[in-house]
Image (cartoon, rainbow, N blue to C red; front, side, top):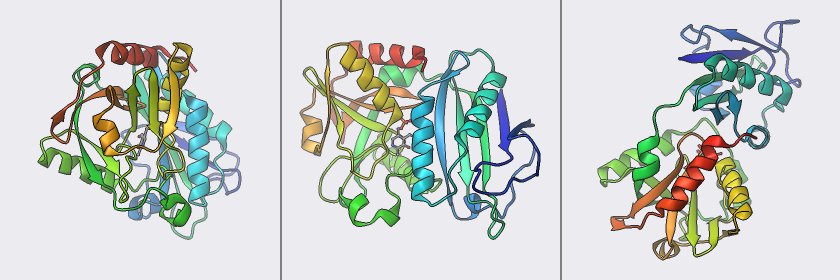
Length: 294
Ligand code: PLP
């Protein structure tokens, strides 16, 4: 089951595709809708968000729309029309029906070169069954990302903190992980600080404190991490952002990779060294994430 909405005018700062047409329309998701000349395809010149939905309601929608706008700004794309995107997201989720878990992907590209009209769509589908990975977890390897932790300040043109369509590297590292007999990756800066997964935020627990790598590290601000911090604080945990090293990971009480669709995957091994799973907290976090309605 899947559904698709095409935006007629993804930004009010750019002309619509059809004058006077509604802001979006639901179309056949199996149809052909994208030009081979679209810069999103030919150059990876665009941005996206992946938003989970539970029983017909999007999760952390405001946080996703904020990050979407921040990514657009980093790429100097016209400001997304948040109302049009929100309405299209809700329409697609409604098409998917009242299922426990679904997700939508919003994609916004610079459009066809020289055309001046950006392209936007929202595609949604039911989520695969992710029950096992949330319990059994993932074996992780650390991989050098090749730039310093302060690259957002020194070289903002690298777009390191934006969710761009250029994810070939994020896929390549998963293949590298497989070659190393692992499932997932934690990127490390060239000066030794842990950053993020290729599609997730790193969380670690030390006693009563839940931590994630510091902000300003040229990593994505995780919407899932934001929700989990709210939940943890309401349940007596302290939370914080901290520059951490691989050594800090090895001495943590528990580690998770968290993201919108997979939710919290406990890390079971780090560079081949077993890591203890905090089963109780993993279950609590995942139950919270599945049921949250914001
Ligand atoms: N970091 C990267 C590079 C990601 O691609 C993602 C999600 O896909 C995340 C972090 C986690 O973000 P979120 O929790 O908003 O899904």
